[in-house]
Length: 93
Image 1 (cartoon, rainbow, N blue to C red):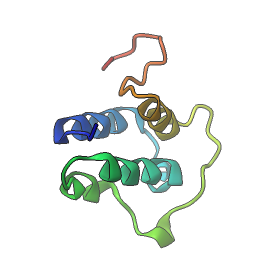
Image 2: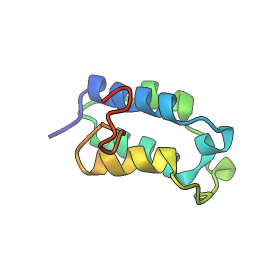
Image 3: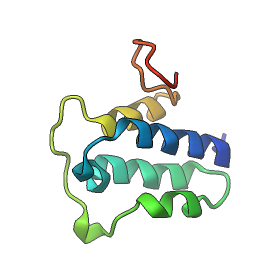
């Protein structure tokens, strides 16, 4: 089943809440999630994702943060959940 614009927006809002460090925005973990959302959406959502995308030459590999906020959001998304609390009932779940 394809994602709706509302679902894509919900994931993007979670990213904006949990990503606190500037280098995360150009990390391939976060950038990969943006591309996956575009692929999974039932319609063109590039107007939602474009403001967060960076050129390929500005991207970098995962910095190995533990936890990796964008990586956690991506993993939750792949598991079929937009919840990022991992069972701790944090804000937004």
